[in-house]
Structures are given as C-alpha cells and as structure tokens.
Length: 102
Image 1 (cartoon, rainbow, N blue to C red):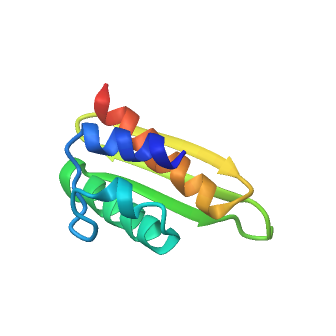
Image 2: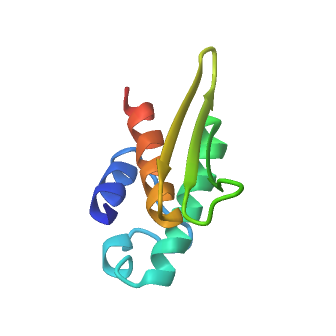
C-alpha cells in the first residue's frame, strides 16, 4: 500500500515539505511515513477541498470508518470500513487520490 500511495501522490505533484523529494529513501522509516501521510492529508484538504477523516466507530473497539468528502460542484462521499485505523486511513487517502485523477 505504501508504494502505491507514494506513486499516486507523486504523480499528482505532491511533495512533502517534511520529507522533500527523497520520499522513497526515508519512507521506510515508520515515523516518517505517518508524518508523510499527515502532510498528504493536509495537501488534499488545502489543494482539492477534500477531507479524508478516519473515525473510530462508537461502541466498538475494532471498527473504523474513513470518510472521504469532496465538495466542489458535486458532493462525493466514500465510506471505507475496516478493523485497523491505519489501514483504513491509508485506503481513504488512496481513494481520495483516485478521485482527483478522474
């Protein structure tokens, strides 16, 4: 998933101010990767008015939902459900990047 996200984001012109252009060399380090994901989330929000929001479902300890909202002339919402917070977040970010490519 990590390589897929890096490629999709790079193809759209995302360069992390935290990691710079050497994202492939430093992305293997887990703290850098999560920081990179946060920067990507912020970039989607600022550049494309897209919110990717991972949420823990109330009343359960294992279910998470990631909402991808894109408000332009058309409102789009994609709900991604899963067990692992980080996995759901990554899938939400990837879904957002795919929407931009369309």
